[in-house]
Image 1 (cartoon, rainbow, N blue to C red):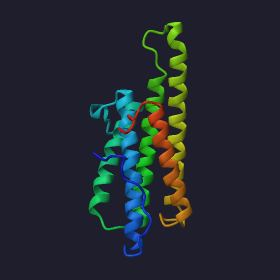
Image 2: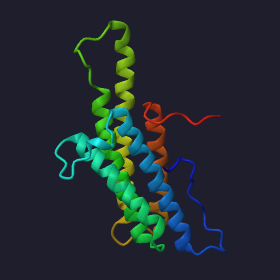
Image 3: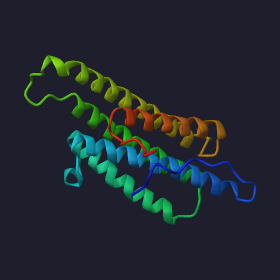
Length: 185
């Protein structure tokens, strides 16, 4: 599935703007998909949790991840359309926020209700990182929605740049929470 190596690109002047926008929206969508997949994995949510009429947080996260994969497949085969491409990135970012919520909840669970004192500080740090990753995922979803919405229609350079930065921040927060493994150096 998608990797996090795709970076938004500046137009080269030889490539039509719609192609550059397509690459940037697609890179953001793939990055959000990787975040969603990692958050689901962290929360123990697998493909078997998909509910076609989702009623549980795990079912909603798994279902939105499945729909995101379908959106990415459609994005790869359709003609460039900045508005549609930005909506795809927005939808995948929203799925990543749902998955982050499930991972945040999972990170705060304690199976037997008791915790050794020596692990309390580690648990608190883990919970803080999970909370930060969730809130950053929501901000990335909101920024993607702003870039896709209204008259912007995926073409506003300021909103697109804000969405790209918010996605980068969400990736870093997910790494800090331990949901995404650090890149090898």
